[in-house]
Amino acid sequence: MNNHEIDYQLYGDDMQFVEIELDPQETVIAEAGSLMMMDEEIRMETIFGDGSSKQNGLMDKLLGAGKRVLTGESLFMTTFTNEGIGKKHVSFASPYPGKIIPVDLSKMDGKLICQKDAFLAAAKGVSVGIEFQRKIGTGFFGGEGFIMQKLQGDGMTFIHAGGTIHKKELAAGDALRVDTGCLVAMTGSVDYDIQFVGGIKTALFGGEGLFFATLRGPGTVWIQSLPFSRLASRVFAAAPQKGGSKDEGSIAKGLFDLLGGDRK
Image (tube, rainbow, N blue to C red; front, side):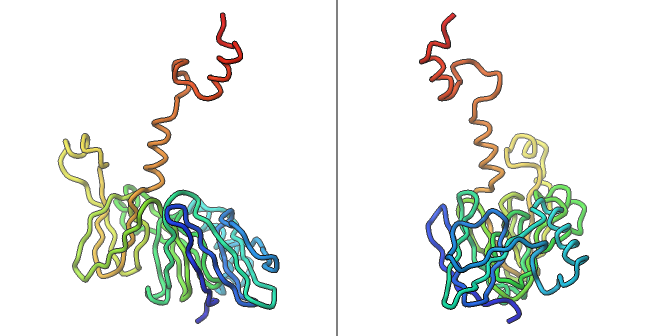
């Protein structure tokens, strides 16, 4: 293998974290801000790009970092290297309720395409790049735009998504229609396209959006039951809005009344 071989264990159910075991001089890369805890003799270093062997020169590193900006991610990633004698552990947590999905890229023909905020961590050597959608309709209406994340290599990688995750195998010719926001990841062999739901009444009043994704096999796809965008929109809709009545206040409003601030 060109990637570092790492062992791991998942903890939790709906608020998961992954504990990665590193042998001496083994390294794992992770999204900035995903660290939960680590042993004392693990060295943490911030780098441009993903630290893969494909980025040896300065221009390669700058190009890799620039690609990450296009996906809405940070310019930097963080590496964690075991500089001790024995096995050490480092843990990473998902940023919102959901599941962490371990994927062995060597069993996925070395390539995985996922939504742009799905990547959590991976063995050093895994390349984290971008995948442009070739079709105009897919780019404009696919829920993730023209750009998705592309993970390449032959090591372990960990992605996360919201709610319950369903893994589905598609045979050659099989098709699956999915809400555009519910698609988490797919292997490179899956054909991805966007279709109009059909019917003006269904499109305007169906509550399911104007478009859905059509996935055609062969390949493997991962579907999430609760996209973070859907959760965020429900929370925002339920939150008290600025300019509302006094009865729609918060804890701060209750304290204000208790201290006599509501008296005229």
